[in-house]
Length: 142
View (cartoon, rainbow, N blue to C red):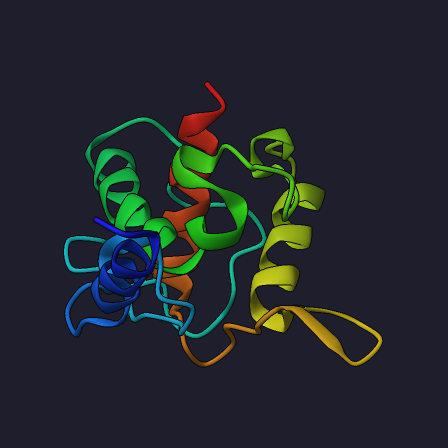
């Protein structure tokens, strides 16, 4: 196979419909199904309500894994192992201040000048989804 034919084959494979799974996350915020978690209401919790061990903690990790992989892994790395493109979230502590930073960053996103470094997820992800993602992240640093 010539170099030109190989390049053309690779380009077709990458551009083919349905092959977006070649990378993790598709870049557009994805909804997270939180079925199985207790609804938290409209008032934001100041600390992660799913942090305590138990069935809901385990369910939050499961839901958080899906939410993380479809919304965060593209920049923060698979299994929360950052490749340097974005902060290593495994370094977050589990204090009220760390939880506040996390929710503030997820809801508001991050910009440097006019450059969006992380899109805001306010109105896109529920409180339950965000705390489930945080629970999954915490589980990766254990």
